Every structure is written in structure tokens, then in C-alpha cells.
Length: 135
Image (cartoon, rainbow, N blue to C red; front, side):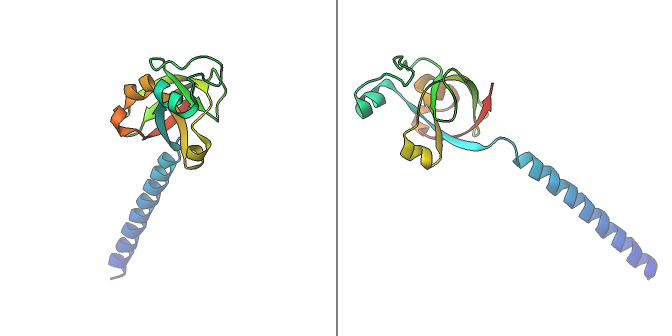
């Protein structure tokens, strides 16, 4: 009986060890880059909001360029934006400040140009979850 109990205890200890190793592995995978939300903005949306399509860097917004607006990164910084839903990514340059402060406080961390957003998601989605990588 002692022999059987000893084997059972060893089996339970092995199972516990495997479970702990797997828990630490998955926890370390989850600690990767933070997840944010992003949307896009266009010349038309800027015209409606402010009456002009001039970015904070002084240049005119171009819907066909791969640019973005961010409060957290300096102008000229290159970022890789990855759509978490489909794995597609795009490299953009920070050229403007944004999103609007009220949206930023709610977790929208970046506004992509129309071209950049459409390269990684359908425009009909409007808002996507992203991962940001500094380049």
C-alpha cells in the first residue's frame, strides 16, 4: 500500500511541476508588447473637425501616405503597427498629434492615415486592436 501511495504522490508532484512550468510559460508570453486600440483619420474628417487638413508638423495631411498621429512618439519616428485580429502589419511615420485627448483617455492610442489603416484592416471596422513596435 505504501508503494502505491508513494507512486501516486510522485505522479501528482510531476503533474504539478508540469502545470507550473506551463503556467509560467504562458504568463511570460502574455507579458509581450501592450495592446492598444487604433482608428484612422482622413482629410475629410479633419476638415469637419477643425476646418483644415494641416497636421501638427505643418504639412498637409495626405490620405495615401503611411503616417499616423500619436501623443506618445516624436515626429519622424517610425513605428510598426500590427493588427492583432489578422496579424497584418504596416510601418508608419509619426507626423501629427492625436487622437483627440478625450479618445486618448479612453485608450485610443494612435490614429492611422487612411492608407495605413486600410493596409491592415477593413475601413468599415473603424477601430482595431493593435500592437506597436518602435523601429
